[in-house]
Length: 259
Image (tube, rainbow, N blue to C red):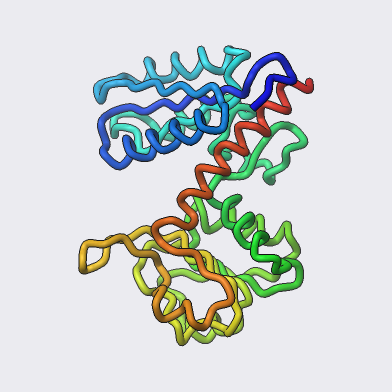
């Protein structure tokens, strides 16, 4: 990455504690950020870090003009108020897109969409299929993926249905969908007989199957012969989410240097 604006984009990730999964995620983010030329820093803080200490680090990064993106790896220890931490990150440096969820995901004021929902939209677009006018089914109503990805689909002029684990007649609804985004965290909630031929299937779920292997929310072997496009688990939405984190950092950087 060149330095047209005098410096490279800067991303800082903060991790508190020793959660094994978080350590892996942070390492993957760091490796990929460095690979594409970002200035990447990981601040590792011990489990006993106080909320005040964590907020002080965030305040310092908010004031650092060389830092374009700040990401606090979740979960944080139970004695720290997650919402207070999220709120402390400057909106124009919030590469996780939490503030963007409240602002309608507009880059106009430097706010970006959450990484995983943005990854889902990008994956759909790479198929060459149009989103506008299509029936999109989002299975999952969570704050991090389900609700924001539904909003992004609406922004693309899709007709959106939101379902979840307690939706009745899910199969009947799914068979009418041109696009399905599964993000409920339940293995095989979408099976092959529930898929409209040629549909685009985006699997956000990460589960551990009875055999101990990772699997998604969609039964891949049953759905793959019917679908037009389908993402695997692992290796589908996950890597694209990291790519969108880098994209979000770049967008924040461009907003900063062009001011």
